[in-house]
Image (spheres, rainbow, N blue to C red):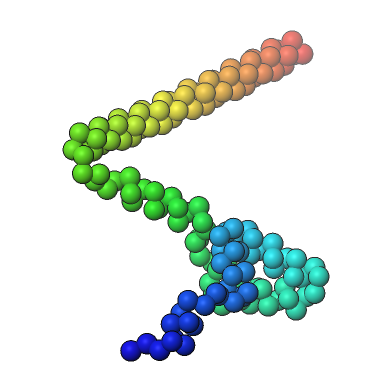
Length: 143
């Protein structure tokens, strides 16, 4: 059985620390680092406190940015069924076609890079052979 004070404490507004922590979390890891740097600039113990808190709470080493969490949430919902079979079939076909186009484009880029590398290598070899021929012709003329 919950009492009136328990209910009031559950619905109470979070403190300034929890609100500021949530605000920094919503801005990402860069905001935490900026706050730490500003702490060091204005009063070094504050910067040190930020650093220790970031290490202790594992904010320094995890990749829980707002953007990465949003992306994984988006990719999970994009594969869920909507209940409309026609739309789900269309979505599945479109995603399959886009993945196929991506693979084709990446293979095209790879072939393009290989052709560019081959052209540069052929140009290098031609210049090298011309220098070698001109060097031998200069040696023959000198002799």
